[in-house]
Length: 340
Image 1 (cartoon, rainbow, N blue to C red):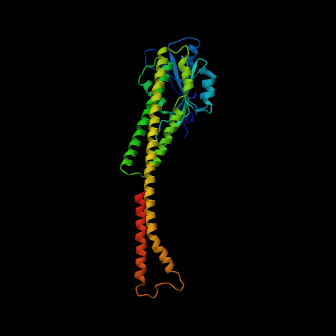
Image 2 (image 1 turned 120 degrees about the vertical axis):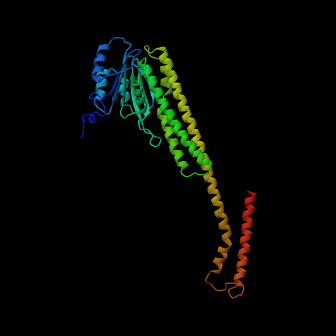
Image 3 (image 1 turned 30 degrees about the vertical axis):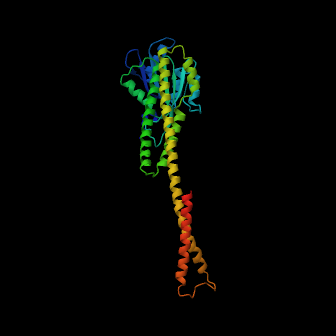
């Protein structure tokens, strides 16, 4: 049976998943889309210390219509929703911060590494966030707000989100380090198994995460150098600090990728050494078997005149010749190996 909730993709009829009203020095209050619309109309054209955060599900087709009609977002935000570029960035448009943030899914694992995009419009009194699939960092932010964490401004809410995302990345890196440690222990113990392919898959995931989650430095630099007039100095400092913390996590991820690369090279070297040893053994066996194969081939020809065919000790003479040549061939191989 299809319910109305399933038709709305976990949101209300306007596409709103949740909304919060923030007041100075007070916990946030959960509001509905109708209450948010009433607040927007009351605060239109008025400066206020209050602000709201509205989070929408873009899978509900009503979301974009509601945002366009009532939220007053910049045109760049609407363009970003349909832009093919998924690079993480924060830029300024019409005195509003437009953020495109790539985040891991709520059920993220290192085996799947699913990533989706979150779009944000951050103005002085209104924060609009929108996504198509549940994301981990935004869910952590919602839980923090519901626990009663006070948020001073709309920019601080963005900073909180970036720090939550950095925390998620720290956990991902920690899990990846644990896997790499296990592979390294198996390598030192001589148990290669499928460790090389596991490392390759893990490295590809980390490269993909770093490429999608690393913010564009140019846009971020311009924003930090010349922030909007309504952004307080303390918010600018915290935004700069959060991006630096984020950069540290990405640097740790780069170091882990380099470590994985070195382990892959070490495993490849061990595999090549084992293959060379096996090939050497095979070469020795082939060389030692060469005299008997040649002599057996000659004596086994079905033609007349085979020597020693009627001799009483013909077999032992041929066996002695074969043994002599085999010893000479073995001595030659051993001598060659010592010279190398």
